[in-house]
Image (cartoon, rainbow, N blue to C red; front, side, top):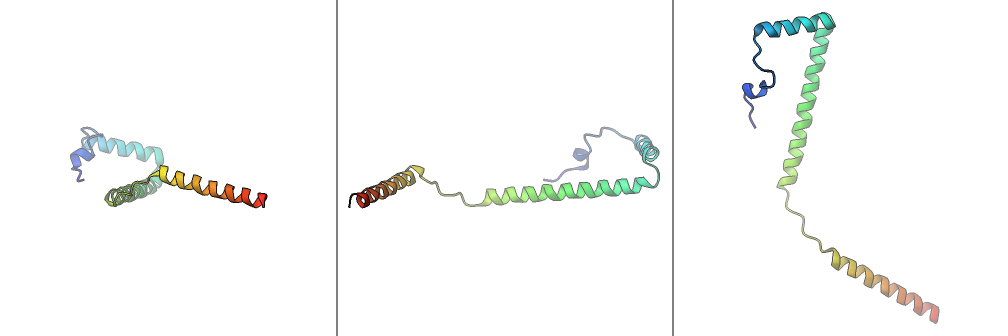
Length: 99
């Protein structure tokens, strides 16, 4: 899944150099010169963690999709076996009380 820069930045719209500088100046005024590097560093770490989690999740899904299917299990047969075994236990219990 390769994303071109046009697809990746499609949600931003048509920003030119002037708009980007204006946004950067607003961020600089709001947070101050000392906090901006920390802000962008933490933003970069957050994006990195998000990408890592997304890749792990996609890898887990692809591993599950590539596994062999689990054999079908007939629950009726196992339920019949359980009821038969409980019948024999109850009959043995009756035999013991009768003796």
